[in-house]
Length: 220
Image (cartoon, rainbow, N blue to C red; front, side, top):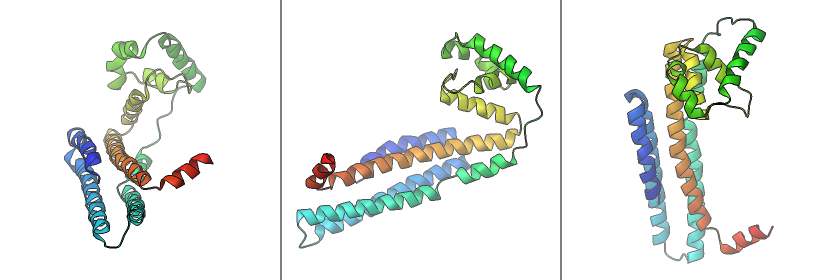
């Protein structure tokens, strides 16, 4: 039942092996195994429903829908089991407070001056001119100026802002910050894997809803 979605999950697992250390990639491998086991469970139960004597098409459809709902609950349990947000929070607590900064008003004015100069540049121009010093941690004022831009006036896309947050964190405790960054990457990949499975289960379940119930819901 989940053959198509497993083929979409596989490249995400490959990404995990390429972008994460072995000791973390193994957790993504376990998620892939969870999904395969869930698929085997669904296939086994579907086969039992189809082979059961005395069931008409409507009864079989109801049984399949019930099964897919059960699979959805199993998926939620797996998502909780494979979520590493609590571990990330534990590590973030270990990060010491940032060192005292200069006078807040003066720092704000310096950051604002930088943002005023950057606002006329495109994202590509900013990265082209300042990319190296931004991401190697050698220009902390520029990093803060970009990260502290008012909501709705972000100078870079969220993906690059996340990288800058990681750069800023590494200024405090490189080892812990690096581990946090890797765990966030792992969590993101796992979330994508489970998200694809949930989407597929929802689609399969909706196919088993009787037409009269769909029409009734649409009329409301």
